[in-house]
Length: 395
Image (tube, rainbow, N blue to C red; front, side):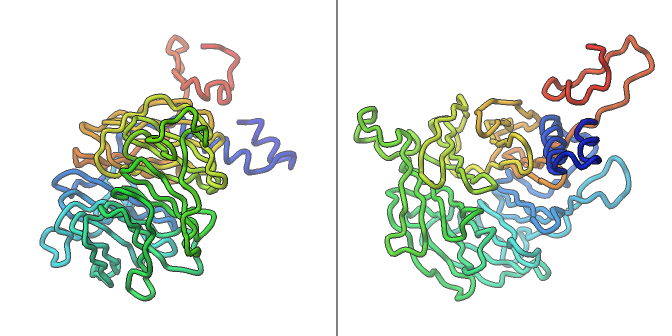
């Protein structure tokens, strides 16, 4: 690390290399934060989390009790041990509270004055953050599993919605109505995600084992259906041809550059796809436990080298290197199954929630100074021990 700093100071190296190296070190050292608690408001499981990208300070949570809570993650107390307080909530006594489980919450990508929520009560609600009143409500005929707004769109205000119907609904914030429908799936749509690179490209995952990429500008909007066998039909039966997984596909996440797409399914597999060609890159992540009957929200790192994926796996969060498939570690702390995790790239922090009703904060560990007593040895994470040690002593 001293070499990175010296090269940067001398102008011999790109400053981003130092930043990437430190971001990577911090992710590799993630541990449960014993000094930071998240105030417990939900009376039951927590299905979804989202951190706004403007300041990276405010977090939303949605629970199976229909409650939505807004937290301030900043330490305003000045104390080492502190609790992140709930600033406000849409509780059970609120006249516009969701009647059933909130499956997705998302901040408006460009400011914190608005956020969205969708629920098993067949509604998608657009909320004014300041008044905690719904500015608009979209009603559907079936259960809503997932929704997503594009983080990069400048020419449209479409919200993609996945429901128990095989049709993907596109809701327009400007007109306040469903603008059009994407047809092609055969069963319920469990996850939807807009590309962070191209504002008109949408990925959808369904219980029919298929993942589709769409260009919503086109009349025949479906660009491709991802095929785990890359078209080698001799190795695939007719039943599995053009399927992404051998089970329900219930999780989607683009890499931050939008060039690749990660999917998870109930076949206990995670796959990495080239989002341009639709090709399965055949990265082997091993068994990725997935027993969820609904959508799973997982996350990816930003600004690291290599990049990492954070995936709920039963009651743990598994951390994988995205492009090599290596399992780095398993974060343990929850008492029950985890449904969601979200990454905060400003400080390389991770937040996870699950059916135990807890939100846990995972933060980079701080290296303590080596004790004066040389008989006591400092245990370092082997993933970055050599890069950070300033001593030639192997101990």
